[in-house]
Image 1: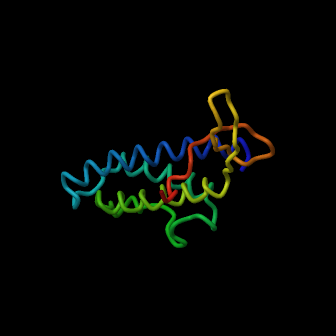
Image 2: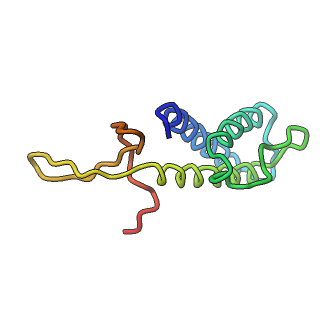
Length: 131
C-alpha cells in the first residue's frame, strides 16, 4: 500500500466505524426502520470509496456495490454490511503491516508499521491476535 492508500485507508476506516456506531444505535432503537436518504447517501459514498480501496481480493461481497437509494434499507441491514466492511478493512491492514522490535533503555517493545518501501508509519497491532 502506498502512503496515499494508507491515508485513504485510515480515513475510510474511521468513517466506516463512525457510521457503524451511529447506525447501530439507531438499529437498537428500531432495527426495522428504514435509513433516511441523507444518511444512506453518506453510507454509499463511503462504500464506493472503500470498494475501490479493497479491490476484488478484500471486498466483502462480490455482487454488492452500494445500497439502492430507491429501496431504502433498514437500520439492521446497513449495520450488518458496515460490520463486514470493517472486518475486511482489518484483513487488508493485517496483510500490509509488519512488526519490528525496538529497543529502549527500559527494554524492548514490538511496534507495528505499515509495510511500504521503508515507511515509518506506525499502526496498532492486528485486532485478530489470539491471546
